Amino acid sequence: MTPPNSKPLTDADIERLEALLDALPEPLQPLDVSALDGYLCGVLLQPRRLLAEQWLRFVADVDGRPAPAGPALDELHALALRRHAEINTAIAYRNWFDPWIYQLDDADGTSESMLPWVAGFAAAMDHFPALMDMDAPDLVEPLALVYMHFDPEDLEDADTLLEVIETLEPPGDLGEAVQDLVRALMLMADVTRPRTPPPRAGQRPGLARRPGGPGSGRPRSGSGRQPR
Image (cartoon, rainbow, N blue to C red):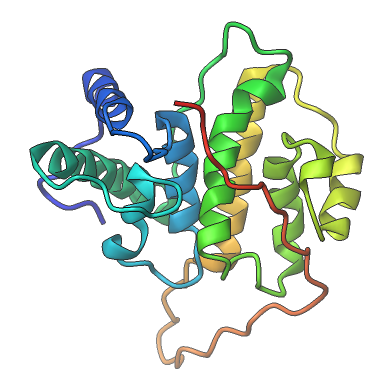
């Protein structure tokens, strides 16, 4: 699943990626590294595969404005593609991976540290709404585990999702919140990227049915912009 020349990013690679994002000139508003990670997960969980040219332009600017061409942008894209490939492999095989979520020194609770990642995920949903448009009841709970870190007032037209969020027990600490997040992503993948078991001998493969049921509504996060 991972290109042969693609290796997981090291801590030094992540620092370099952060530096490249910070160096982008105004008025561009790039995602920070945590928001970028959430954005990539949102891209990869779409029911239809997105081409790199569709999603890469929102890495350097949340509104998709073009960034200055050159070696720095090429390097930024290469690092983002490597992380994309790493997460893709984890999701495809339902393997654990470490989201780029960091304890903020001045965070007032777990959700504040989770928020940059979740905002990046929400930005992907805003740009590519196919996942949120699915009529799939099995998506409601995992989406609630992600969006529970937003202020309820920031979720518009998502009454069903808010009802589920109200039933969830807040995570005890950041480690528990991250575990819940990865579990939620894999549950979403079971809906949008199901693993089809090989047919038994003599059995013809059947057609998968699209899940039906009430929709969850589409939570809105505003612009999804992160502070520079």
